[in-house]
Length: 113
Length: 113
Image (cartoon, rainbow over all chains, first blue to last red):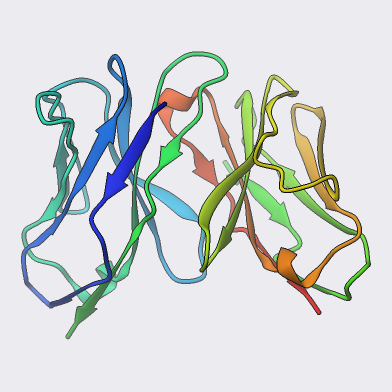
């Protein structure tokens, strides 16, 4: 079945550091890929998505590229801020009726001033 | 759009009592999902509906849990009787189709004492 694997956490960075959070997936065909973010005490919010190979999703300075050849969707940001401290979830889904998101375990990011 | 609305935001109840969590999805969305989040187990999909019909309830932990979606604008998750191990944050999410991603509610934090 479909699955998503995220790197182990937590991750602690200093403000303005470069961020990479690894995500790989196992699925047949061409699923859509997502990154969700959960700030403390809140629900998950869609951060960015990509629906086909080589697509780049971007939002709030974060980017991720759909790499079919390596089955990866790594999240990057050039300069993190304290306000980026949150839990980040990678996920995949298929289109069509009865589809659902398959989430990775999530990784906690803490950014120090 | 008001987003996905969950109620109550917080619920504290005694072991053995019945608990009902409520969710109003985004108008026009045809899929609805119930998740449970704990530190130990992370984010777990309990059940999801498509066009008000339950599609997969394999994540429902046991018979004490039940979910209904009587119409396109309302769903409930009921626990009867509740137990301390049910303490968690319960999220509801809705989507037009899985491939477009979900919109999550703010969650209900349930504490069973």
